[in-house]
Image 1 (cartoon, rainbow, N blue to C red):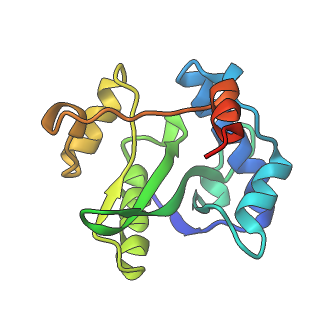
Image 2: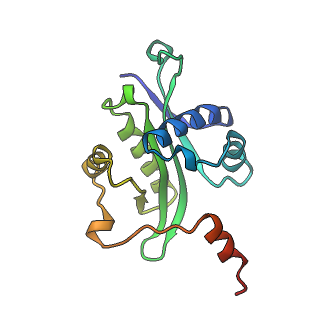
Length: 171
């Protein structure tokens, strides 16, 4: 299938938000989403962006029944590993269901890795829900390892009231 991968632009935020909604519905966490399209626009396309994104796009002749040509995306940011140095973190990798199995997910993931390597990164990291065997298999086929089982790490998060309470503590 003919498709292109390109850097996202401000005008893509509406489609990124649409696909993010599809992803969170699939992962059964749609009720946890608090960001808006305006947040995406500000956080990803300001003078100092907090994240970067790429888009998978198909030509008009392959558009969806709803008329979409933007059919996949990845959101990523740069982090730092005190063991390995520069790293790229892939927050989302999504391809609309009717376009899966055509190499688009691989191309998106490879592009994130290429962008990371060009920025001096030595690793790509991400999380995946433990019940999504299809995604786990896909990532392992790409050479990724499950550090939860292989290295015994747990990904932790402090958010909501706990985050606010922590941020309000005197140091």
